[in-house]
Amino acid sequence: MVTATRSPLDAALNAWAQQPGPPGRALEVRGQGRVLIMGAAADALPAGHALAAENSVTVLATDGTAAGIEDAGEVPFPVVTDRPASFRGHFGAWTVTLLGGQVLEADAVLDLTRDPPVIQAPELRQGYERCDPRNPGALTTALRAVANCGGAFEHPLYVDVRSEYCAHSRSRIQGCTRCLDLCPLGALAPAGDHVALDPLVCAGCGLCTAACPTGTLRYDLPAEEASLRRLQAALQAWNGSAGHAPFLLFHGDGFGAELVAATQQLEGGDLSGWLPISFGVVSLTSADVLAMALAWGAAYVVCVSNPARPDTHRPIDDQIAIVNAITEALGFGARAAQVTTADPDALLAMLQTVEGTADWPVAEFLPLGERRAGALQAIRHLHAHAPNAPGTIVLPKDAPFGAVEVDPDACTLCLACVGACPTGALQADPDTPRLGFQEEACVQCGLCRATCPESAITLHPRLQPALGPGTRRTLHEEQPFACVSCGKPFGVRQSIERTLERLAGHPMLAADSRLARRVKMCADCRVIDQFRDASEAGERARPRVRTTDDYRPGPGAAEGDKSSGGGRK
Image (cartoon, rainbow, N blue to C red; front, side, top):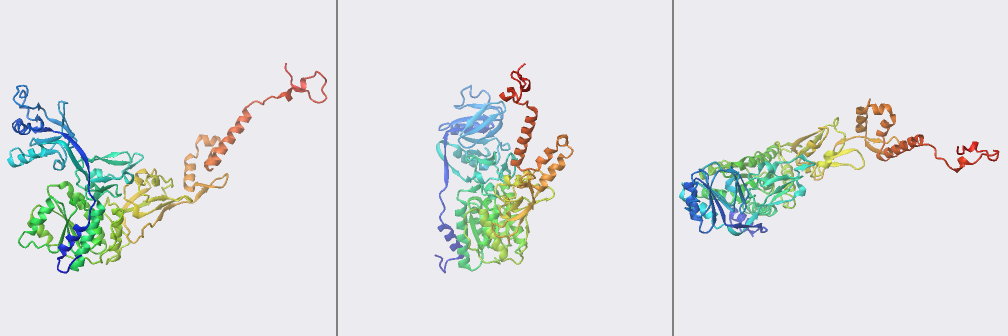
């Protein structure tokens, strides 16, 4: 319970801490104590000696100066002189293929090469340590990190994958690639119609989960729903204690937490109006999370990003651009920003420029179900209390909200787009040729556009907040075509007429007018008509079957006269 004497920050952080979070999951990884040390022989050999007592060490001398050392018996571990051609794997299962074709395996890798990294995002790789051997402190830390890599270890499972929701592909046609484009480690890869995650490569940066529009990828350490409950509780406690909305400061557990603490220690570093919150990694702050934070009572949101991680900056800016496009269209102005600095003074200077209040009441909806549904509730809440209430809000390109438009002159209502749509945004009507659309379900994956054989579909990133949940509209509708045989509606008039136009003048139809008529029949009547034609043709061509009646004399014939019966000759 919040007391009258407690500061708004204390009330908010206490409410945050009281919300329980489910325990994280982990996989067991076993190492055999194999350490690969790469670098110039003068750097790698001393490191190998430092680790050889308790580890199985292999040295890769990349400068070619260690030839013959192993044969001379001067070192108690193998020494290979070559350079790496490819490098892949994870802690407990690193594989290095050398230019000469030899393959080295290790549980942990110590890279002392001073060359550009041989793998992407080395700072995120568990079991891979890279440092400048000329820095004694960094070298000591790196040696400790790779030592004793034998035994059983736990690797956290950061991301939960629900493949059935994925909008990556349908029928070998590519759709959404947002997560694949962002993963810095290559932990995600196409796997048929969905994407697959290698959990032992994933380092939990969160970029994929923030960008995923369908909820296929959900952050699980901590779980998204638990984090959102804690965020809502903290904002409600602040507003209840202070009577005014806070400025929200999103940061990560490591770099961000240290920077915020250093900023608070500065002279004049008063952050009394700010509520610092960490989800573990700042790149989890998707447009959905930002929209819900504003609706729950934050006046402004700033994301503090590490300047040493430029791969996270653009994705976070993209999410912020979506939210600012919404708040600016509603008349609230920009309400989110990113700051990339390691300087406490620069952070403080930026935060002191932020102004404004939450010009809307605090929303009370709970973070239940999908994060996307919560974002739509938040946007509708802001729209209901906005000085401007536009019917349509135009969003940046690749935003995960939008509409599908159909060219009625090109669309034949083949409904291939309905079969390709992974979210059910495009819908068929079982009773009439009609293409329906539910805008709130559209994630702009582009599968419908790529699948359409007539190139009749275009995508429009946008929002229509006034549309109620489940609102459906018709994109295209045609009159059904009635079967010329039984009169049953069976197809689209435009499609039948277009087919006949394309077949006009075909030699087969010119030779047999019944074929053109068959195009106008339903499936049942078409089969019946085909069998009827085959039966009639067969009776005309087949010789008459003779019976015993053919050999009986006709009435009035003389005995023994068989000429009338066509007897045997």
